[in-house]
Amino acid sequence: MREGRDGGHLIARERAGHAKFYNEEVNRPAAVAGSWYPGTARTLAAAVDRHLRGATRDVAGDLVALVAPHAGLVYSGPVAAHAYRLLRDRRFEVAVIVGPSHFVGFEGVAILPHGGFETPFGVAAIDEPCARAIMAATPIVHERQAAHAREHSLEMQLPFVQRLAPDAKIVPLVVGYQTANTARSLGEALAAVLAGRRALLIASTDLSHYQDAHTAARLDRVVIDQVERFDPDGLQHALDVRPEHACGGGPTVAVMRAAQALGARDSVVLHYADSGDVSGDKSAVVGYLAAAFGNFVGTKDAKGTKDTKTGH
Image 1: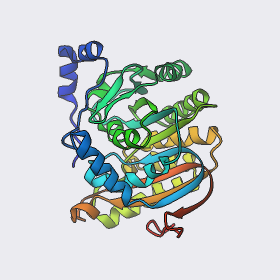
Image 2: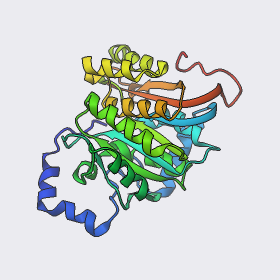
Image 3: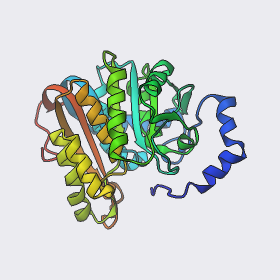
C-alpha cells in the first residue's frame, strides 16, 4: 500500500472547519481502519494474533523502547509482531508513540494532549498529564490537530498496543521536518518526563521505499547497523547524508536518544523483511524493521533456540 504524499486537501478541510471536529468529538477518529487494517474488533484481533503467532523470539530483562513499521497490516504486521511480542508479561502505564508526518509539513513535533484515538478495539486514551508535561519540557512540541487527522504512522501501532497492553494510555507524537535538532530536543524532553515511569517508547518507521529488494537491503543495512550498535549519532549522520534510508528516521533517533538517557544500554534487531515477502513483487519494495532497546539478559526464541531470521 503506497503512502499518500499530497496533504493539500487536508489543509483545505482544516480551513473549512475540520479542526472543529476534534473540539466537538474529543477523540481522533480512525483514519485507516477497514483499509490498512481490519475494521471490526473481531477480525482485527484475529489478524493481530495471527501475526503474533509467527513471532517467537523472547528477550529477557527491562524493555524501554521498540522500533516497529507502519505500513498496511498485511505487509508490515508480520515484522511488527516481532517487536510487540515483547509486551507479553510486561506492564506499562503509558506508550509514547513517535512517528513521521506523511501529509503535513511543519516545524517541530505535533501532539494531541487530550482525548483518545479511536480504533475497532475502542478508544486508546491519551495520558493527558504526561502529554502536557512533554509540551512543557520543550518548545518544539505543540498541539497541531491537522498533523494527526490522516496520519497512519501512529495509528498502525495501536492494534498491537491495544491487544497486548490494553490498560496502557498513549501519548501521540508526530514529527514534522526531521532535523537533527528536533530529534535531539525531543529525545531529551522524553527522557526528562518519563524518568521513573513505567513507560514504553515506540519509534514508528518504515525503511527504504520502492527500490528493488537488493538495493533496499543494502540501504536498509545502514539503518540496521546503527540500530544494532545503539548509535543515534551514527544513525543521524546516515540520515543527514541520505534521508530516504527511513521515513521515520528522525523519530527513531529521538527514541534511541531518550532510551539511552533513561538507562537503556542494549539493542536487539529482532527481524527484517520487505513488502515483497508478502506481495511477491521484489521489483519495488518497502523495508520493515523490528528492534528493541533496554537492559537485556539474553535472547532466545520461544523454543529456546537462537533466532536466525535476521542473521544476528
